[in-house]
Length: 216
Image (cartoon, rainbow, N blue to C red; front, side, top):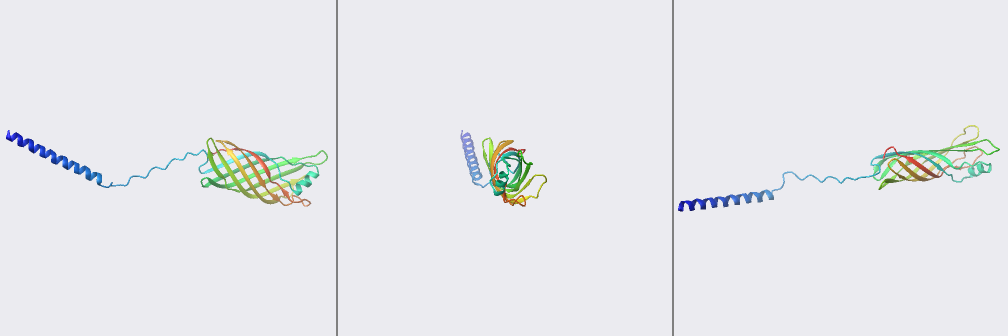
């Protein structure tokens, strides 16, 4: 009996020592710093409906014109060259979202022929640089594009005359979906006289454009 009691006491002491050693090991492991720092959290995913890096658009539209001394002379002769048709293309690459930068080009045309006179033709070209601001909303993108550049215009009756040049300034505001869009623009583009006997002309005005967007 004494021998059995001694065995039980010895086993009990052994279990107590083993438990204390195990608790001490766990406590030391918890207090020890990790061998490697934890990885940084993954960046939050930003889901945009608009372009992330670049965009390009092709447009067709119709526009009015601003008044000018030369336009008054043309209308006195019975010609009315408004409205005009427009073909446009523009593109931009992201600088720092939501700001982009890129080129733009717009080509316009018009003609008129009174009953008693030959046909008068007009061709216009606006081109330059733009800095679009892009803002996403559900189902589409709003693009506001300040523009600056140059303007050229040709007016002729029987043969193409020299081009009249001048600066161009404009602002285009568009709403674009996945592949189609619509926009309105306003431009000021005062040029030199389109002919030797003419006066200053202005090929600016308001434009309504419909856009095709091959990349969104």
